[in-house]
Image (tube, rainbow, N blue to C red; front, side, top):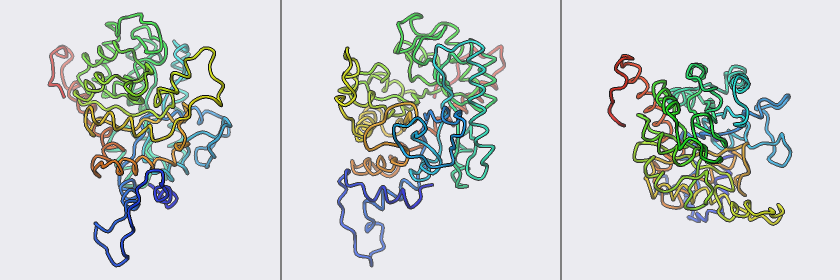
Length: 400
């Protein structure tokens, strides 16, 4: 879906230092392709997927138009994502986050969740020639083939199910395809990385939530959870897990990030970690500055460059290989690094990975194929579990 403007972005990436010489015009072989042209071609050929954008909150604003181009900036309505910039950046699919603070619970959380889901569904229904609501990898691929943007949905926080598996099933019917087990505060059944431990991970009901997610074919998302909650979810789940927007704790000590052991375990079971672009997650200096009391003035806070995103990708790949890593930006929900001001800048990541020596298949895997395969695997596990008679569901099924 990348247009000429996006190609120009890739071609101008002097920051990546790709300085290959342009071959003579007469040479038409693959070897004659410039580095810039190769990056642009691969980005265009790839199905680029982002597993976490908070643009849903923008859709809820009266008068804000997803179809119009906005300029990144400090104004509340500027944002990071809209369809013109999606096309410029070559983003083909994204999970719109269904989010509200963990302090909103009970029936009010369910009501607000349904309203947010409705905003995403109305977006697709109102623009059928440009946007498709997708729930499967096959639907994402079909949308891409048709030249349309695929909108998926992920629910950011288990508090929104109101402690009800029936409500969870309704979210599935409406199109939600991952559930972040907790947000920044504990739920009644699981501990969050942003709260004091209360349950020692997942309660028995929390493990039932994981099992029901498996049965439905919804991805179990462990971004935001406490470390013990992660290990409980990993042990309980019969399907691979996703970290929809998390980065590397070895690079930035933010507790929302994942340790190397967690990443190895996630990848070892077939899961995928999607790298978050939040400056505090990317840079330890920025994270530590944000913890100071009193905090530093904004002008004195350390700056963070977009190349840090690539550092986190590279670290994860060295741990688990290129088939277990992807992109989960947190656009419209966080402060992003210099040079990645909005979705239009995505081609920089492709060019930077190629400059590091990543192969074309590896780059395409990271850009989207890994999460599409995970969607397929989770769906397959769900179908397998639903085929088991209820009286026999405690019996083990083969691990992925």
